[in-house]
Length: 469
Ligand SMILES: *Cc1c(COP(=O)(O)O)cnc(C)c1O
Image 1 (cartoon, rainbow, N blue to C red):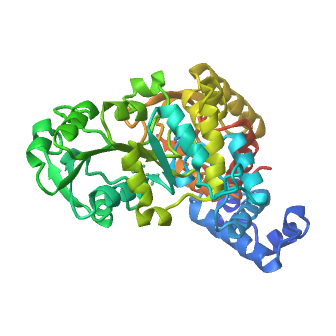
Image 2 (cartoon, rainbow, N blue to C red):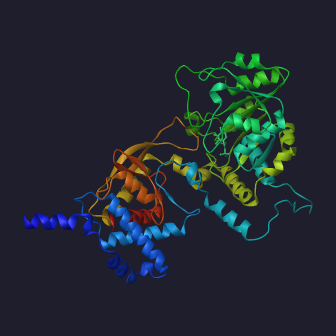
Image 3 (tube, rainbow, N blue to C red):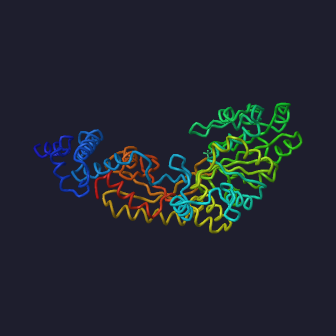
């Protein structure tokens, strides 16, 4: 009887360490040496409150060490309200909320070198005359896609708005009802259209739009046919919409423009993109699009940018529109984009060195090996917890390859101390945040987006959850 009562006492909320005990421990802990006392007290109080909320009546109270680790993490969080590096263990390669494409090393070096001093941003060194911003990027894009002319702006939203304003301001643009997309972050096609000063003319139905729907809608006020990559959704089943070839032909016959918003933008002919049905810029242009646009930081794997390619006179008209100046690309982006595009001149190098491509194309054997390495490291660091390797599926993200689940390998963790949802929150708010997927009561660390350099961060974040160092 007595023994049982003692057990209840030790495991109840009352067994949480006192603030005095914790503050004394913090005094002797080097991790808190540089922190302001009030912040330490605040973080410890928050850690204790959090533990109290998470505990059931008969749960074992977290140790002093565990609470200290969590308080240390929370202190990091206080210092880091702004933008900070995180570990993406979600397996979603192009995650807009996590900054989309990580850059190739050479792009990072180019940014650093350009940021440090001056550069020939708008100066032709040969002639000493004024040059054009991003001219080398344009040259590379012409070489890689066979387009007549190129223009690079701030992002694809800006590119679409600019194309609409320059080619269809005050006039009608015909779009299929199946393509009036919203892709999150307040990008809704009808609104973009309005902002660009164009008049939206919807045709067809959500699931089916025929070429004749476009053809019948073309009139005096029509400036353009527009096709929009549906990005983050798919209409499947009884669905139909004309391809670039048909739309290009119709646009030529009726003397209107054809603009293809490719969304993600595949610029090289790649078997994987092809299998997944991702449209290729080169093909769309060849099929008759006057102009295409896509993002720099989706499948291309470069910095945030909007890339516009097309026929010379059309691109020049877009370039001269006053809005072009307002959405111009900055010098650090030019630096990163230029070297990223240069990598594409050597496709095998591109696949090796551009992280987006390398992650998307990682083989199953490679992913399994990486998951096993991480599981072994985590099992060694946390002997009381179980980490198993399992096969899973994940998506590219960023609106690319939306109907293309990729086989991957994850490390699956059923935390013993807290529920998976709570563990995911703790990992996200750890000193260095780790973002994960939660599935069937388990945390998944997807090896597709986790590099070796991330392992130490993951270990530290798990330590904040389970209370080990
Ligand atoms: C992603 C996307 C955009 C917006 O591109 P940003 O580079 O994010 O501005 C526009 N259209 C489509 C079809 C997209 O997929």
